[in-house]
Amino acid sequence: MDKPGLGKCIQCGQCVESCLVAGGGGNSIVSELNKTADTGAWNCVNCWKCIEACPQDVDIYGFMMARRRKEDIPSTMRQSVKNIMGMGCCFYISGINEIREFDGLAPLKLIEKHKVKTLLEGHVQPKT
Image (tube, rainbow, N blue to C red):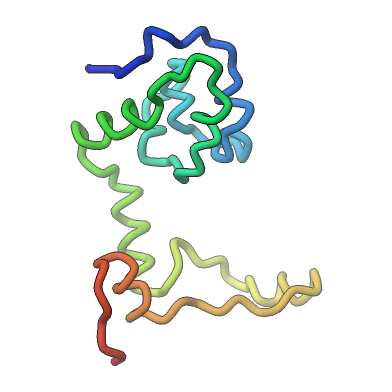
């Protein structure tokens, strides 16, 4: 597999330290760079903190996009999109508003389906 600019990587770990996904315990694009996982290209939240942190200017974005172009979307990612289209969120936690109320937070309001379609399809949908 073509790995743009990865030859410059010195395995310093600064990308891992800056990664929001890795910080949350998930596999990220930096997990792939460091050869600890191979699913991170689809988990990236596009914050680009890894690129800013890299002292070697490794083309992490190029690597991630090359992976995404060569692979099918993982089934878990497809299910997340179906969930968003069906209920306005990636996954729903039963009793979430009770939990939020207990913590002094406002109730969770799901995104209207037509707004989700607009975001995913890139054009305005009429309200239904």
